[in-house]
Length: 212
Image 1 (tube, rainbow, N blue to C red):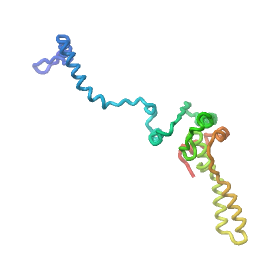
Image 2: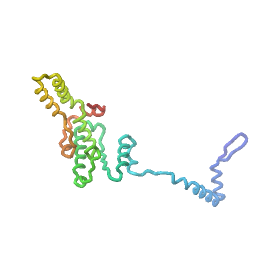
Image 3: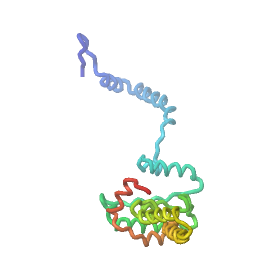
Image 4: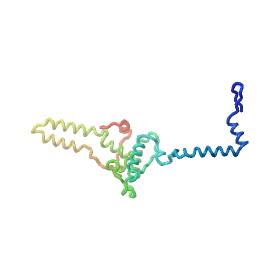
């Protein structure tokens, strides 16, 4: 192929290389070997990441797990479970019960119990089911409304109580304090007995990050 450039005609450089390799194959092979040798020192700077972490998406959750792994790499091994669900399945109680069962099975596994490390507070696990359960118990503003209203009312009554009503006010305040959910460790039995209710009611609040 010829390229016209004014009055000159330039030959396609690929054709030139092809003709040269046909006419002088030994020289062409030698040049290729020299080019490879020149490029070889730079090969050490090419990094191929074929580790397990390379298959996970680059998001905030994965980066947090990677930071934790870097911190406890020598002492802690992580078990990750991926449960594939269809779009909209998180709005179904069956899906949350399945997630809770999977997490409970992992927690109650006799081969893993002695190796569990309380990395997440007092728990060795941080699954979707246990996270949702704890949010419903302690942070959901709708579920907390009843005991918060009673507590606020008891505090208000105690603050204005006189000598005759102070004992009754303190008793009411004590009852209101007892209504505050106690912190518990989420274990296998807790997950298996979890009443998920209607996820379509509380899931939007969880997605919106609503907390007390």
